Length: 147
Image 1: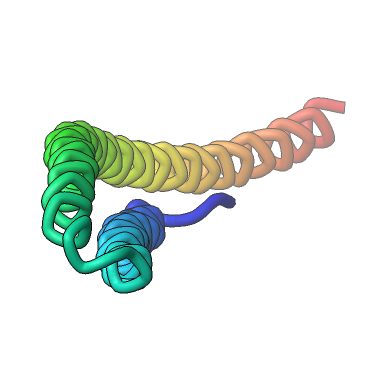
Image 2: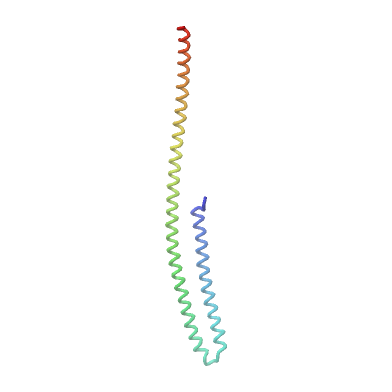
């Protein structure tokens, strides 16, 4: 049999956390590297150019950070949708499991009643067979007397 709903939920949760943390780490690393590179590039330019270069590069970094932020927001929305969908699926699976358990219980009760019915019929058949045998013996006795 496959994994239980609880196991699947745990796996999804771990994957989701890894993806969200990885994305955040990646974006933080990109931002950090870009800012360090700005300092390195600006530091190697003539003093009169540094301010202009730093301002221009800062605009570029902020633009990239805004794009990364939009991606993060979009990812959170998608994650929220995924979570809602997974919750619905898990609720559906739980309801399905409850139905299966109720059906199994009813089937077990029906089977127990059927088995009891068969046992009752077997007992009645034994009693009837004993009566038939007794009648056969009595009939044979009478036939012997008649002969």
